[in-house]
Length: 189
Image (cartoon, rainbow, N blue to C red; front, side, top):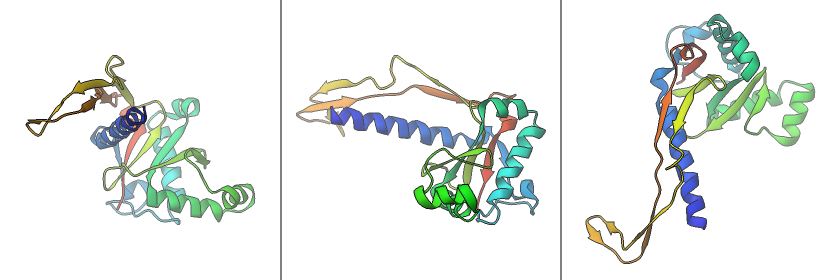
């Protein structure tokens, strides 16, 4: 059923949006974290290397080096920032640039030992970064993605003729106290 597939996609997007909205539970990472003055970071091709390297340094300083070696590190950029990562990678020369120039970059592009992703769901002024598998989500399996058919549903207080489909998702996000130092709310301008 195509409608159910679309509803599944919408549920996943709703989960991503809700996850990125929980940025208050992560560690702030701002312009001072990359050696600038306090305030939000203006992402540019000239400072992406600094952002990546300083996130890795902050993870190691927080005692997350072994966890990062085991699970990997990620940055979930805004779409416009991901384009800057692509431009930077294309300008680096040799194998990386050749590959980027031939194929572009895809989700999970590995550069400087970090996997780079993009999303249009980031809360304005925030980018998510950190160690993979450090942020926890609990999803109730018994309700996730289950379709419920409603015959002659009530919409806006009036009953209509037809079939309605309803689905729900019950979830909870948590950045555990010992994991919060390796999860970053990168404050961007």
